[in-house]
Length: 196
Image 1 (cartoon, rainbow, N blue to C red):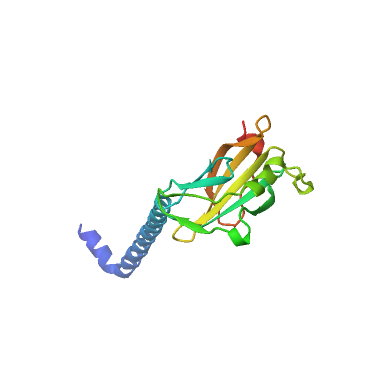
Image 2: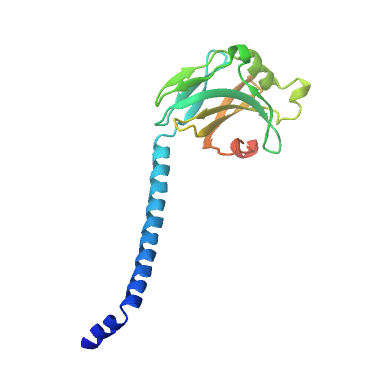
């Protein structure tokens, strides 16, 4: 024991330097772990506040839609679009469902729902797909897309794929998918995968 005390006494500076280095490494590790914890808490908080829109057909001729926020956070600046699906999975003939004079930007709180106005003429163009500009999309399928933000201005989208039933000359809602996007681009949709 006496030899250890003599060693420490003679090499005090080196021992102190080594102790400082170890302390800096431990502090750095704790800082890194704290940063990871904070990021996870932020991610969980965002998930808890995430709006999730559900698009349902609504009305006598299904010319309007019911938007329902089934998420726990508010959906802000909701905008509806309609599109055909290109065979490569992208969107073609993407346009606002409501023209400028009827364009609707609205907000839905958690568990709120709202019906849109009737868009029979526009929807009929996409349902029939007889005009030349509709020759690029997959026949018998179109999408209604809602884009919106949460309270932190994080962008989200909901895509509902609708399939035309030729025997009845109307359409049915097949599926809905919701996601977040950072790049401003909607993901590609492969209708054959969705319509199984």
